[in-house]
Image (cartoon, rainbow, N blue to C red; front, top):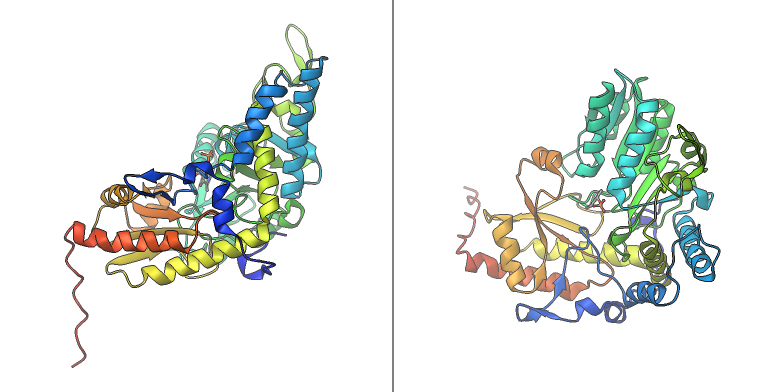
Length: 428
Ligand code: PLP
């Protein structure tokens, strides 16, 4: 069952200063200031254990996987498949064969759109998305819809940035083949009630793909309890390396799906004019995979398990609550997203300052934030803005980081000579 932050029982608090020591990159000064890294929603930093696991692999065990009969190849294969088992345990998959290694969430969604899509979605069929989606959970469906003549529909958000579930239910029809929604919004921090969405979609006969790029790094997962049909994640957002991600799918669905790419590793027999394929997951892993990446992802999972997902959830809930509280006093600060029960993502505008100017000012103070549309252009249009500034927090951030951000935001008002907003008219 996906644990909602409010349900988590805290065992003991996170020792952030000890955790920080595990991330060598954080121990540096940027532009003369202590580095305050608030861009983990884009990509998290990597603990020493992950970097070491990759180095150790290349120094002791590298060879190509699956094909070799020599010791190094068998060692590499064992490490690669051990990483698959770790991912399966971490997300509560029924079987490691449901875990397909891909490059990223982006590739995982494209795989489903390209393989499952044309077989199951036809002319006049519908795919239901939400305005919270990252472009990687929009564009692959646009490509599919254009190819087969299907229609895309969107669920809107309410004033707080939560999905309008009533509207979702209304938009589901017998033509809906798939509901594709994010677990956690990278733009607003909204945590979607995935189980409810899955139940409604399944009742209407549609499958559900959950974009877990922002879910897997921050929430305990159990695929059985979540009930979705596909789930995706990106290693680099959860303390792992870049270039490795996962598509989880129910075994029976993956077995039915045609291969996504052809090549070595995914075949059984190759004739001149046709081939037979291995079963899942190998059917979807053509060519030499990112072996080092999977090993690094396995090490990242070990690291997160050692920290404890329940403690991580509690810590992030505290940090975002503190950030919401602290920023309330900054003149001209306007935050987006739900007031409570949300992920540690803070998207905001500050007076009339352009997010790019603000991000550059913050960088001059050693504070790394993101500014722009965050690959959320439909969401930005719904919010009536072109861009926001976004601070995103993770297990190595603490209240000092929030304080540094707030102090720099206040200073930016002086730096850019922003006039204070007019005080409200006094009651007559
Ligand atoms: N989905 C969400 C919600 C994201 O936040 C991101 C990345 O920011 C992605 C998908 C795409 O992830 P990747 O670039 O690792 O494929």
